[in-house]
Image (cartoon, rainbow over all chains, first blue to last red; front, side, top):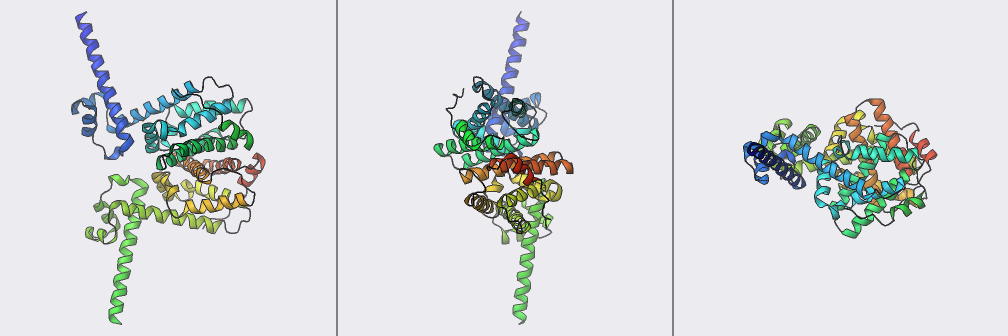
Length: 211
Length: 211
């Protein structure tokens, strides 16, 4: 019993150290170029010993990739949860885009990480890309969207979202961010085959509450 | 006369050094993160003395900004030239997008620089952004395009181009790059209010020869 208690304590401590390193990686990503950050800075920011880094990660790159994967996964799970009650796939897509493009206002840390990672954010193997593919394909299957190559269409939609997040980080006026996010959604719905009036109407509906 | 000859020679030499530094900056941008590059590496690559760097640039950042501005300007001027003979603003826009998204195949150096610079490429004060704004506004004025906020629309279109360039650099198969570039143009023409059939037809027209 005592032994298993010790093992559990060690496991918990190990998990805490790992979580602290990932959290430090996330914070550093919001302000710093990963190329310029040393492992010493990461362990200092995480308040753990320098040597413990290599118990958890083989390299700085692996830590930052893990941190980004965690952000991408949280982002995707949040969108799934918030849009779960919506029936129309066009509205699900529009709400996902509008919520994400509001990140410079609502989730500045995530917005800065998305900006830092760039298009690689879209091609990460978990999280957003498979979700976006699933949602777009479903909307096409039920005749709601019309588009050609799904991979190209995701690159277009994702790139447009990145472009508008960039705008929001440059001009962080809340009303301007809301406006740009809704215009982005209307633009993308037209790209996906909806008529202009309907695209604008869907992009202006009340948003489901995030979180 | 002799004095003026000497002055001219010095001026020419100074211009050559500056050009060599900018060219080195461009080459380094294709493979390296500017944050990781030292001024010594830049002057070595340019084959000029370390001390001469500060005769031309106040900082590494100023050199890289100058190199990017040069690329953006060349890019914009090339598009203006190649599309000069086209009358339909929708075709001008589509050809510009299709040529740019082919860069991973036709101009790999420029594609890598665009990927490196990211959305900041679109907000650079010269070159592409003012040209894109001019072309989109003209197309809207003559009733060819329909969209809301021009700045948001440029961020969307530019971001989509960046997303497809990223795809092309990841999967550099020439036919796939052509296909993605043309799909991108059709997607953006729909976003700008064209019906799907017409968007696909314009995005499939023979391209004017670049350069």
